[in-house]
Image 1 (tube, rainbow, N blue to C red):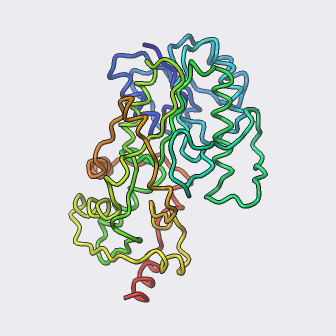
Image 2 (image 1 turned 180 degrees about the vertical axis):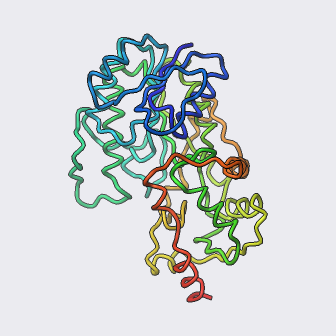
Image 3 (image 1 turned 135 degrees about the vertical axis):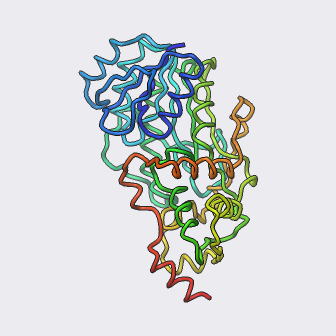
Length: 342
């Protein structure tokens, strides 16, 4: 099997490349080569997906059995469309890692693969979308843009040659966003720890290695595949997650649970200031049953926590990224909230 991985230098990309090489596959990666790491055994081609001449040069390295696209999160549909058109004649299948944000109901409503997806043209540019009045959710423009990139893939490769994978939150060794690493470092510091909302609230995050394995399994699939990737509803909880962070760091910290309403009145930013805390009901109501039926397996969250801590403890550092600075509450603010409530 010979595959092309678009990305390959950050988080999910290296996990895909590492797994593919372990399967004995030939792997080509395409990225700008400015950050991340090269993986021994993979052929690296450097270039920019927004430059037609770089795409043409890449296509000349084919053919491949499949393209695995892990790196389109910041691209417009128009840019993705140019890329898939350049590669359509030199690849048998296109496996596209998208997001649950493509659904109109995210993050308010329960979701399954039949839920309505944002209408978005395949050739839309990077300009912000004009959203209809009354749209609820978090940054719906991102979801609409990602829906447009999905359309670019399907319109070019056709239904029979495409897999669309829509994960929620991905955690694990190598994470560059800063969600799980922040909680681990906070647990390590100990003391009174502001724990958000209801400890029984479901968490549906998935391990990067499980996503990578399922991505590669899609290379063998026939026909159009659409799957949400999430842990089983209700299997994992915020309380279990934070306790796992305390356990692996051997912390004596004390979790102090504060109700959602109090945190909202304090003006805390959901999702970032206390990572993974979101009060929207749809965040923990993602139906991934089609993926499970197709072979997706999601390891226990405690295992992901332990392996990420082991990765950090060995001196590894994530790829620098601007999103890292957005995550985590200021210690003084955390202390002030705890003192005002208790």
